[in-house]
Image (cartoon, rainbow, N blue to C red; front, side, top):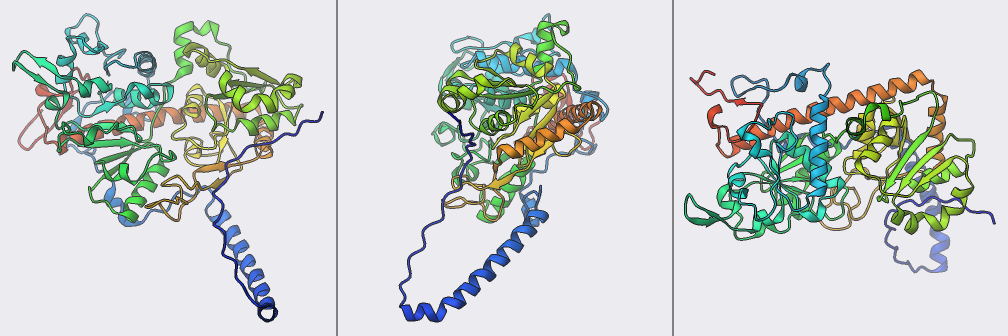
Length: 555
C-alpha cells in the first residue's frame, strides 16, 4: 500500500469569524462591483507589502525603539581602570585563543553532577581546574546533600549571584543552562530544601535560614520556575530577583517580567524583544536587560577525554553522512527530515537518534514501514549516555538541526563545538548560532506567530508584544531537501572551512559570555554596595582575583 509522506507543522490560531452582513439583493447589485474592485485592490496592495516585507525583513531582527536602551543593564566596563581592574585568564580576552580543554571539561563535569544529584547543593568549584585537592579550600568544592553538617558553612559564603534549580527541572536541558551560569558567575546551584530549611548556627546559638545569611544576594531563576519563593514572607524585600527567560515558552507572562530586577538574555532576539516589551508595556520596577550570549558543554571533547582519542573515528568531510538527534523533543523538525529522506532514496545515509517513547507516540505508526524499507535511514531508538552522545558528536561531520523553535539551541551549539557542517532553520535564535553562510546552511523558512507566546507577535492575552515577527519556524520537507542538496554540491574543503568557522564562533561566544558574567558580578556588587578589597573578597576561592580600585587606593 502506498504510504503518504506528510509533515506536521504548527498552525497559527484561526482568525475570528466575521459576523455576517445582511443586505438586500438590490444593495448587493449596487455595491457588488465596488466591493469586487476594492477586494482586488486590497489583494494587490497586500501582495506588494508581502513581497516588500519578504525582501526587506529577511533575517531582520526586531526593531527596538531607541528609548528602550534605557532598560539596558550597564555593568562596569572591564577596561575601565577608574572603576575596576580585573585579572582574568588570557584566553578569555585573547581573540586568537580557544577556551582551554580543562575549562570546557569543568562545564561537562558540572553538568554530569547536576543531572545525577538532583537534590544537591553544587558549588562552582566542583571539578574546577583551579581546585587543588591538597589545599584547604578543596572543601568549597564538596557536593552537599540535605542534612550534611557542612551546609551552613557553605551557605555563609554568599556569592555575587545565587542560582535556584529545583530537582524537578534538573535534566539535561536546564542543567546545561544552570551550570554555565554557575561556573562563570562563580556561584552555586541551590535546591529547594536550602530555601526551606532552618540551620542551627553555633556562633550565634540560633536557628537561621538561607535568607538570613544572604539577604542582599540576587537570586537567578529560570523561566517561570520561581516556586513562589519571592512571594513568601521570609523573602527579604531588598533581595534582587534575576530571570533567564526562554522567550518562546508559553508559560511566561507579564507577571514574571514585571516581578524581576534583571533579565539575562542569551540571544539577541530575547534582548531586543524584552526591551521593546518594557518600552511598550511599562517598566515600574526599573528592570534591567543584560545581553550575555551563552555557551554549552563541549560533549564531543568530553567523550574524547573519557574514552580516548584512539576510540573516536576522525571526521570525514568528503563522505557525507548526516546526523539528526530528536531525543525527547517534539520541536526538532524530525517529520520534515524523515519526509525528505524517505522521498530521496539517493540521499546519503542519515543516522536518526530518537527516544523510544517519542518514536512510538509520534512516528512509528506513520513512518515505521518506510524506515524499515529505506536503505539510507539508520534509526537508533535508545537513550544515550554522555559518552555515547559525545562520541556521536565527535565523529559526525554533518548535522541536521532544523528546529521549529528553541530557547537557545544547545544541540546546535554542541555541534558547533565539535566542528561540523550544520543545517538549521532561518528563525531566531537558530540563525544567531549559524549567522552566516560561512558557518553553515539555513533552511528556507517562514516565521509563524503563536497566540500563546507573550513576545511572539500574536499573543491573544493581555500585554503581548506587538508588531514583531513570529518565533516558530514553518518549513517543508522540500525546504530541508534543498539545503541538503546545497551541501552535496559543496567541496570537502568548503565543508571543512564551514566546520572550522562555526567551531571558532563557539569559542568566541563562550569567551563573550564569560566576560559578561564577570561584569554581572561587578554590577551585583555595586548594586548591594559590597565593594570590598581583595583580602575580603566574598567570592571565596576565586582564582581570578577581582581588584577594585577606589579613589586614593593603589593595588
